Amino acid sequence: MNILDRYIFRTVASATLVALLVLLLLEFFLTLLVELEDVGKGDYDFAAAVRYLLLIQPRRLYELFPMALLVGGLLGMGALAGGSELIVMRAAGLSLTRLTRSALQAGLLLSLAVLAVGEFAAPPLEQAAREQRAIAKSQDMAIRGGRGFWARDGDHFIHVRAVLPGIRLVDVHMFKVNPDARLETVTAAQGARYVEGRWLLEGISRSVLNGDAVRTERLTSLAVDSAISPQILDVLAADPSELSIRDLLVYVDYLERNGLDAQGYRLALWRKLLAPFTYLAMLVIAMPFVFGPQRSVGVGQRLLVGLLLGLAFFLVNYLLGNVVLLYGYPPLVGASLPTLLFLGVGFLALRRLR
Image 1: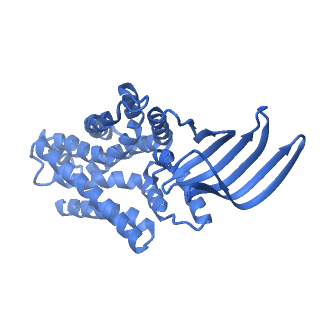
Image 2: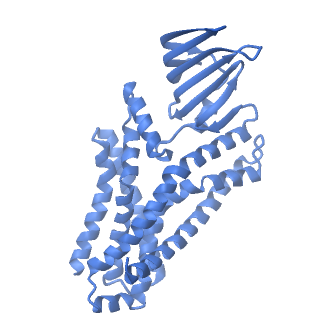
Image 3: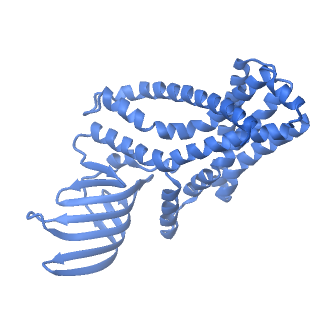
């Protein structure tokens, strides 16, 4: 990376980080207003609400980054255009392609950092935040976080890897302990669903401990009564957009092995895998507004353009994703089409400016 690349990187990165900070603060205070309505329920006080909001900020950073990168690219490169620095660079022999490539390098480095946050930091913190909020609101619910959650139900200790919308449980382990604190049975189920007031376990392997002997049996299904209600677990349901790539792969495999619809999770998986291209598309679509006839416009106009373009992308992305799922097209089409559309429009506009 030469001096020019480093200079453009600092310009785009600083503008993007400022835009991201503003968006995060705005989202924080708007969400806080919503959370204040629940303050006072159980042990959920103002400190708990603030703690919840702080824990979900990595997720919000991941979600708001495309908009921040678009606005940062417009404002950062726009500042160079407003100061005639881009004119000097082009007079020195640098083409639009070369300048755009420098901006894309900055966007790629920032994107990799944000993707690491979205893959490794955001999912466990989001889950911990939701579990802590659920515990604070419902004092009688004995769940503890980790990978999935733990719950105590009478003489059973239960571990569930994840809760899918539905309500459907994934990878359930039940440990029954007798009054002498001795383990009696261990029940492992591939999944569970709530049917007529009872949990129906599916794909079961159960081990019964009797002294030094262990008897193992396999069952297709088993109905279990439990005080853990779907209303309690609904707050822990794993939304596809909140899962890491690793967890999405696990859930897609589980759903398909059990003959369930996995298209929504496949769409989320492809969107995460294609996220770097999506981020770069946001920068590409911004460049014509920097190099084109509007390069002398003010900061306010650039900000408005960025917000409108970002809103248009999110709307197209949401609509195409739902249309693809509705008509049964491959999820890859819904995940890639908005990005390809913005990349195509951006490169076409840049080509006309040469």
